[in-house]
Image (cartoon, rainbow, N blue to C red; front, side, top):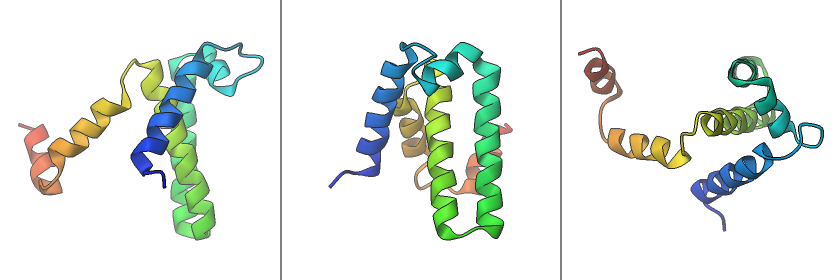
Length: 108
């Protein structure tokens, strides 16, 4: 059975490969051709849709929107040259740290 990490790693590889494709044949290539502001806008739209699904949609709606958020976040990370491994390492670093402590440490 796949782990969430292996699924995200495969998706990251697929996105990297599609970034090099023609914008006429690939949504990822089209987003990248439109530039970072468009990619960020799309991530924001998907995040908003996830919030709406959480508040007024079904569990199925939220699952679909959450998948869209993760996908578009990986597109954005790839466009910025940030590997998913860096995000996972940051999550590992924060593991076991109170969210309140972690936020306080950022403002110091």
